[in-house]
Length: 399
Ligand code: NCD
Ligand code: ZN
Ligand code: ZN
Image (cartoon, rainbow, N blue to C red; front, side, top):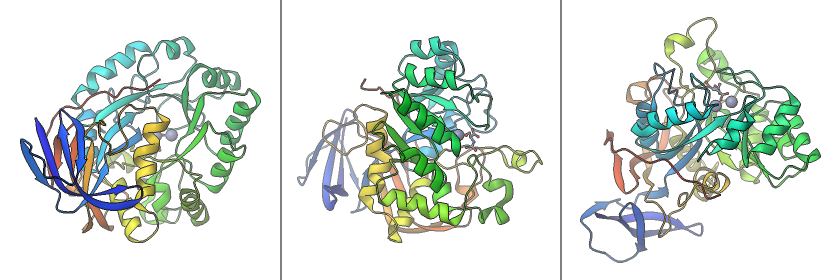
């Protein structure tokens, strides 16, 4: 089966060109000016075509919390948002901290329509960490958040950093500093990826020793909201780490444009409206459907460039997590791509959302720039409001 996607506006070395993309057997076979023959022709109508986004931080809630989301609904929402690969987090019930739980989750994820991978939870389980096969990273929680995985034993944290090639940390404020100090003091060569950096202080701590094996992730909610949004949204804008000041928000944008930020990830953390309305509401907001529209809108407002979006949402995630054959529009790479209409203006509306939680902190916001079609492993999985439920694959890592 071959598909020719005609009239794709693509970035080649930071410049836009209109090209045709030939897809064969789920891979990008040719990027060309020629009108090659194919079984099926799709006209991208000069729209922007990017590599599918790789979201390294989502909570698809399966098993145990499937009233909030599951691999099918979460992946449908992701596909609609132009995300073609996700890495799931381990704070499910049971948590993904044992080989049995990992293999169980692997079975459940087979229904996903976007490509997927798993982050394994750290909780005094060094021997399981060493045995876990084909995992993206080990997730270390140093602060309280959804789930029960918090670790504050510094010896154990050191052992986790030594036991895994790639560690993602949920660390807030001074805990970012402690982590970097442990990395530096013990000359740890493994890679530390600091999740959802939310403030100037956390950003500076993460980059303080300029360690090459430390990378920084920021989320759309910390980029597009600040603590003032709490007044109107209350619990619907409460997540970990909390929204910070306008000044912190600016520091994150500054970090994006000066190279201090390596990855943008959604931290898609759906909770039901009813749960958010309770006095002891859970923390987290959904994000896979709004991440790319928010970034394209920011591009339209000259806040970020298209190459930067590609670098932080496609290229760097693939590089840092060593995901094979993804993150670039390149011959031989997997045919994971998103077609986006950068002129399309539309409001975020909860009734359009495919996430099970059916709300967004960005509800009502009019954004310019939306994904219109998503192709995963060479299959059209999303096209103008319609989802085609074709199962995707678990990603493989080059290490
Ligand atoms: C996340 C969740 O709900 O799973 N919540 C959040 O506020 N970010 C957990 C997390 O990423 O810390
Ligand atoms: Zn977290
Ligand atoms: Zn998270």
